[in-house]
Length: 274
Length: 87
Image 1 (spheres, rainbow over the protein chains, first blue to last red):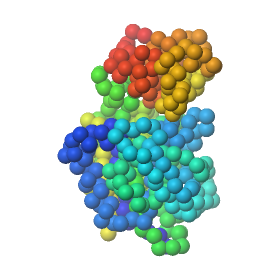
Image 2 (cartoon, chains in turn cyan, green; image 1 turned 180 degrees about the vertical axis):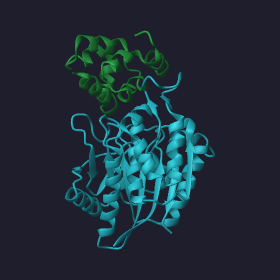
Image 3 (cartoon, rainbow over the protein chains, first blue to last red; image 1 turned 30 degrees about the horizontal axis):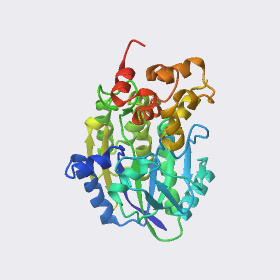
Image 4 (cartoon, each protein chain N blue to C red; image 1 turned 45 degrees about the vertical axis):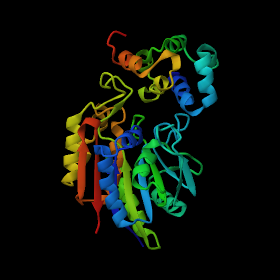
């Protein structure tokens, strides 16, 4: 059977690659390096990736609440992320199909896609963490941007289902989980900071989320992460749902590392099973 | 509700380079075939992003417009208009 060996939560701002290219010792570079150290140490065979598309893989003509990419490769970024090369990323098609089937059997009615590109929200993390793109991913897309969003408890249950699907996989495989997203962020909307393209409407919420994750207070986080709260946290505050799905896999484990970037509305974390 | 069409125009600017070139060269003609209300059409051509946002367009998608200088917008003008309270 396959086993989960680690989990990682990271942000994905499209400005990060240019920022780190300009200043390789900046805080963002150091935090990704810290996460990469844990990822390199556990040597996963596959990464199950919880992500929210930013209208680039999908659009409002056909917008999924939960979707999964089931094919051999994907590529991107398809949203002109500055200072990013074009990447081709392998997908574990068999594991993706297994999770899709297990999910639908258990009441998670995934849509799926067999031909798609991905945007900065997956590729900024991979650009820093697995730049050789040698580890296949299973992309699971959760609607974190277009209200109404799926409920936090539903996303947590999705993570629990993924954990059980991994445990049911017949072959030996080391699996890492990754969640991509911020906790409080407004991009392009009226809660931007003056003179910027983004704002952090609720820095206190960022600290509260980090505290709950650090102490493995899952129930408190699920109680607090109402749709109203996620909306108050900014127009992409719903990206927290990716982390909440990750917590459904992590259960009551505490992270070995967690660090917020409050002024950017986000955080970085790693969990190890060893 | 046709905010969908406004959102679609923003997304096309990012994903379709030939549309991006035409909307930069001839904005009015480029949006001529989209099913917009008169108010939406006027707000787009004026770069009135706050009005478009208030009528339901996605702020995340609207931010694509200043990125490529569409409708005379740049990031400073966009920021100022979106944060303005008198619209």
